[in-house]
Image (tube, rainbow over all chains, first blue to last red; front, side, top):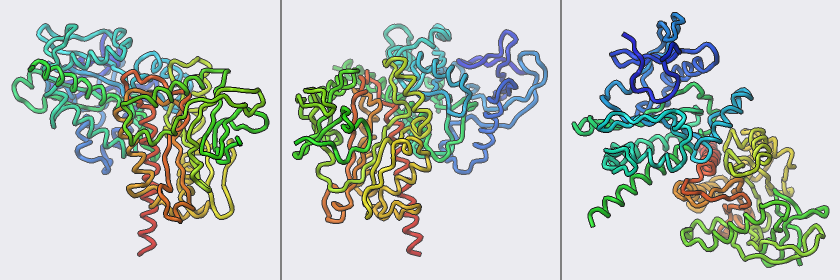
Length: 284
Length: 284
């Protein structure tokens, strides 16, 4: 039984007769290959290359969804059979995951792309936080006692630097009101199993690897309050997704991804430091 | 007695009746403030801010030319008295310095600039190595037995990634022919006083500082073979120059500079590793 992913926060959705990804009950995520452009082929090429690449360290492979090949499936838009990438559904282990989808890099285009594509990306990059912060939030859902807070696309697209800081605080709070308590900051962002440590591991790899340039790729942060309260590990995860615009690194590091990742790391560090500061203040 | 700098490798030059920087014999570099745009004012504002900024660590201040205020001087274009920035002439201690001027960042414009300025920079960034490598060589001179090798601006502007690798090898070689020997690589790039160690110090600061964004700023590498052969220290130096496009960091790290710097560090590391590899091969 295929169904529309419940926890998709960004990207094309399989609703209203449109083409989009599907999931099943056994933890698979089916992403349709599109025939209107080269995206699908490029993403498939990347997964093939990455799966068989023996130079990827084990601790880095963990950041990527497992790839199970391709499969012909009935497409969600009713257009009949279509090849789909079969990937790990990274939300399937989580009951009520809070999710942030962050597109990394101060540039989402690449020199080899068409002029129209570059101009479109260039405009979007300048009018979002992509150029100023080196990343932008593409979508999110944050679970709290009254359900999910999932702001609309237009709202997310207009996020400022301060909105980003606020979202990063709400992500680790028990409340999503104007004064988030950041009560999970220390456990989710901090510590040796925390998100910050994972991001620093990624950073170290990006300082060195010159095989791939991850244009327009996202870092997905998942945090499950229920898992946390039940002592389950990992209750917080960092994954990379969306490889439709990965290009050959040609012996050069992905300075665009690395710069954006460092900027994002600084934002997370600041939320963590502020939350520690306020906890200290509470104590005195 | 003011004169035209002998070792200027990039930027506007005080020749043919044009406006450009001048030097004296006491180690000062005089950079004219231009009245046709905001560059001069912005650079002056930066030097004032930076000089009085108590949050700049001592080991970082060393990377910047010393600022001695401004002075009214006869401009090199014959237009009469004009205010000049009075800076440290960073080449004055060197007899025959080999110099690389590397503009850091995959983007040389900033969102607050005019549309025309952005479009000009965008075009230049795409048609040089700025976008692909995260930096571009703006100018260079390399000293060897037959004098200086100083390729013209047009040649430098068309440098590819492979040209950049070749220049980085020639910079630390006794010859500038097609097969540079890299015999100074270990001393100049490597070691605890070497250029790589200095660049890593800079990188650590850029991972943290959110005060300034150094748009269109250059890293200058200086290496003096004579000083090296005489055992003088430092015989290799790293300086930052050109602050006409420094803007407020607004609490965000300079991910554009940082990403480009990391890419440049990787290039230097590779030349160093290759030269060690070939030395090892020579031994066996």
